[in-house]
Each structure stands twice: as C-alpha cells, then as structure tokens.
Amino acid sequence: MNPAPFDDERAEPSYDIQARYLAEIGRYPLLTPEEEIELGRRLAEGDEEAKRRLVICNLRLVVTIAKRYSRGSQTLLDLIEDGNLGLIRAAAKFDYRKGFRFSTYASYWIKQSIKRGIASQSRAIRIPVHIYHLINRYIRAEEALRKDGKPTDDEAMSEALDVSVRRVKLVRTLIVGIRDADPGASADALQRLAADPQNRGHGSPESMVTMQLENEEMSNLFDRCLNAREQEVLTLRFGLDDGEPKTLGEAGRQVGVSRERVRQIEKRALQKLNLVLSGKRRAADN
Image (cartoon, rainbow, N blue to C red; front, side):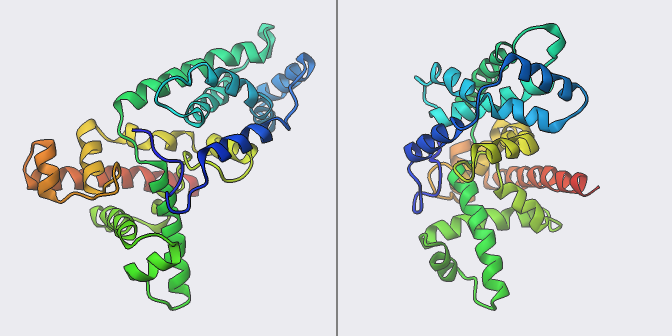
C-alpha cells in the first residue's frame, strides 16, 4: 500500500513537495573534514546541536542513496524518510576518533534503514499519511468550532474542512473508536496520533529532521504495536486503505472470524495504540 501524501481533497502534488524539498536541502553546505571532526568532538560531549548539524548537512547524501532504490513501489519521499532515520542513527553513533569520514560511516546506516523500510512496506499495513493529516485537521477544526460556540456535526465539520461528509464520518469513527476503547484517552494522545512524522511537506527540511529526531519511534507505531490481524481489522473497520469503513460483519467475512471476534480485536488494538500514545505523553510530562 502506497499512501497518498496528503488528504486528496486539499492535496499538494507529491512532485511539488519533492521538488521543494530537494531545492531546500541544497541550501545546507557540505561539511569539510575539519568541520566533521569538530562536530564529532562536540557530539562526544553530548552536544545535540552538533548532532543536528551533522544530519542537516548530509541530507543530500540520503537523496543520492535513496535514488538507487527508487525502482520499487515506494515513492522517493518514502525512501528519503527512511534514509533520514538511518542518517540520524549514524549521527548518534559516530566516533570521529576512528578516522573515517562521517559520510562513509553514514552511508551504511542510510542503506540499512532504506532496506528495512522497503522490507517493512512489503508486509505491513500502515495508516495512510493523508488519514493522519485529516485527523490532525479535524481535531483542530473541532476545537476551534467549539470555542466559537458553533456546531460540530458532520455537515459543519465537512464545511470547515472542505471535505466530503463521508470523509468526516471516517475520521470521526476512528477518533471515537480510540476514545471508546479507553475512556481515559486524552486529547493529547489523539493529537500525538495525528502528528505522525510521516506527515510531510510542512516546514523546512530542518524542521522535518527535528521532528524525526524527536518522534522517530512514532513513525512505525502501527508496525510496532499491532500484530498483522489487528492491523488488518483496523484497516477494514476504519477504511484506512480505501476510505470505506466496513461493518463488523463485513470485516469478519474478510478476516475469517465472527462479528464478535472482530469487535474484540478492534477494541484490543485501539487500547494498545492509546496505551502507547498516552504513555509517551506521560513520559514527556515527567
């Protein structure tokens, strides 16, 4: 499954996002060997700014490597995102005292991360990026309407978001499902679900990398938390793949289990997601 980059009714073409990204990363100069050593020294002392600069100034290296793997089903932006995660890991592990260039060391991690991403994509069911984007917009619009004392029914939300009522029902169903699975689910936890790092195209490459540095683990939330059957049930029940939510009976027939079993799997999966999201929020507050 190769998700569209954003909500299809307010989408920015993926080639525009890609062109803008490639143009912007060209603004960051390549590092000299001396600069790499200096940043390596600072990194060894725990300087996070040094780590960030190592990453920012090597974004073009990721693009160069990602292009070698662009013949498959994943988009170049998907490959770049996976490669950026490898670059971040390389920056965290880099030891300047061993005498090799950072680009040489980072290339290994970038390639490994891209290969893992390709393998994961071939077997995983992921929440499409445009769904994350629409959840985020929905939550913000709903809060704004409530503050103004305005209705938040499906028609009002459809007008506020400039999307179809069907789209509104899809997102509302997903959000309500999470809240029902755990009545303690907070707005903050839902916001973290909406703010997935795969939501590309906003801000500079620098802010994109900063987001990945802060939320690397969130990028594979579905993969990490749910087994294959749980992923399949949520995908069917909330229409994550085709925008058409399935009833308990329809999902059960496709998965090969009873309606009640689908309900149990769905509830367990939503509880898992909320547990992780809420736990991350509590950890951040401590």
